[in-house]
Length: 231
Image (cartoon, rainbow, N blue to C red; front, side, top):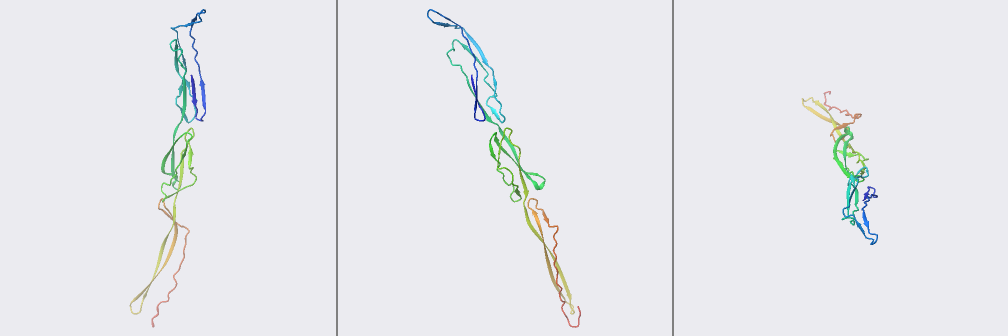
């Protein structure tokens, strides 16, 4: 019996085993003719062999070679040899891929799975879950290799996209002149102030520049002159 193990590294390991059977007979010394015992039968067996173990791979048979062999006068000339081939299949693996929001305490934004077999190189295919809100932090591998025990979880880090923004505040000054003829004249002037800030596009929240200060002024206006009257 010959068992050939086709190993994961591409090599082979051959294990030969034999059983020996002995049949009795009588030889005529004058004629040289041998008469074999027609009623002879002998049985023996090969025990099963545990297939070699390789992490990350499964043999086609965990135990191989167990066989009972019976030889008799009728099948003596028959080839009773046995040949077995044991192959190894790479185990299937699944590993999670998580997209986490670094600006929100590592909250999970998106999940997925990467699949392959032991020894496989698999692309991570990182994609931005929402380009309008997030940026992908560099550092995630473009591909992973599944080892005998699979691969650890792949984490993709995200940060919030931001945008510069501003807001304006208008200060209005109103001067009302109560004229000698009993009418009024209104003069309106304004100052505009602009404060900068940053808008978080993921949350919609805007943080205004806390240290911002802006100063402006109204110039003095000469009051209209009316003869005989003092403003």
